[in-house]
Length: 249
Figure 1 (cartoon, rainbow, N blue to C red):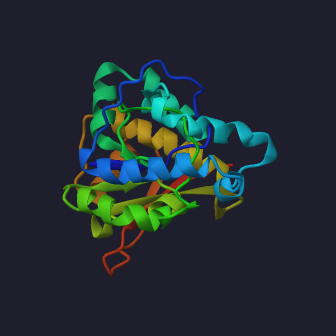
Figure 2 (cartoon, rainbow, N blue to C red; figure 1 turned 30 degrees about the vertical axis):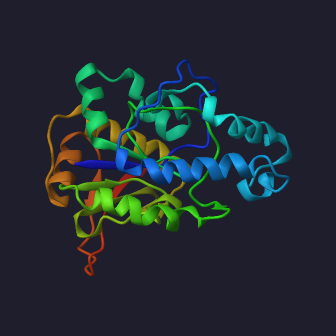
C-alpha cells in the first residue's frame, strides 16, 4: 500500500546536516534540473512573481538561493501545518514509523517524490509553479514519476490536492480520499477540516500492520478503526475510486 500526500507550505526553519541521500534515486536527474532552475530563478527580479510570493515572503527567495549548501532535516520533521500536525510522524511508535517510511510518499515540486526519512533542506516551490525553462512542474515531473510509480504494486491511497495529483494518477488501483461534513442531514465537501481528517486517516493507516489490498478492504479497515466511511461505486475508465470520510460539524 502507498499513501500519497502533498507537502505543506509551512516548513521547519533549520536543518542540522548537509548529508542528502534521497529515496527514488531514479529521480536524481530531474531533481538536479529543477534545483538548478530554482536557484537561477531566485537570482532574478522575476522570482517573487513566478513563485507566487508576497512582499513579506521575500526571505523564501533568499533561502532558495542557498539550497545547494543548505542543511537538511528529515521530511518527517520538515513539513508543518494541519495535515502533518494530525499525522504526527514524530510521535509514532518505532514500528509505525518504519511502516510510515515504507507506505508514505510525499509529492514535491522540487524533489518529485520523498519518503518521511529522506533529508532535505527547507525550500519554497509548489508543483503548480511554471518554472523557467521547463514550464509547468506537474507536466515536467509526470514522465519521471510515472516511470517510478507505475512499476509499483498494491493499493494507492491518494490524499493529495489537485495541484499534486496532476503529476501522476494511479488509475483503478487508486482510492481518492474525500472528506465530507455532515450537518442537519446534509453533506458538503470541506477544505480546511479535510487536511486535519486526512492526517488522522493517514496516521491510522501507518499505525496498523494491516495491508488492505482493495478499496473494499480499505473501507472495512478504516471503519474498524473508528472512521465513518462510504465507498463510492467504481468510476470506470481506469479512474480511482472515491472513499468519503464523513465528519460531523
